[in-house]
Amino acid sequence: MIKRIFAVLIIFMIVGCQEKINSYKTIFDLTFHFKNKGFNVSDYKEIGSSFGESEAWELEINGQTVDILKYNTDVPSQAKILRNIKWRGKMIDTDMTVVANGSFVLWMRDLQNHKDIIDAFKDF
Image (cartoon, rainbow, N blue to C red; front, side, top):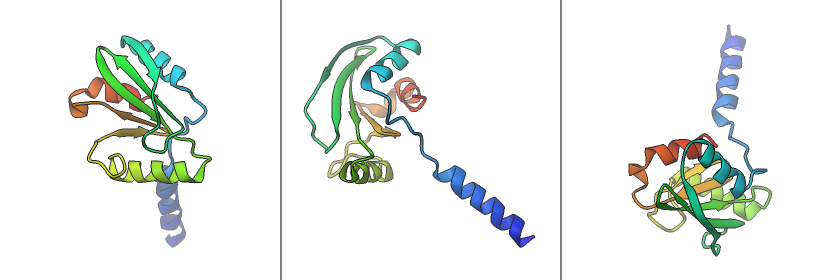
């Protein structure tokens, strides 16, 4: 009986700790994903790194400006920053609420008012 309980706990820990692996995907994969979900994606451009990420992009999704950051989890300093962002739900040293998904982080004004964009991003 104790072995079964222990086995069930181990399974829950493994399933609960699994993280989405999308580090092999690109910003272009993400824009294609949004387009396939019916969003109008336009005017994307690379922007400078501000939070230790390997890539930063600004997109227009349905007329809303969205920043997408990508972290390289093979670089220890970037992996540490990304873990911190995921744990806090905010960018480092700011009160900017963000949504993280695997290696990607999404930020936009009035984030909470754009559930459709958030849901599509989480599905990426």
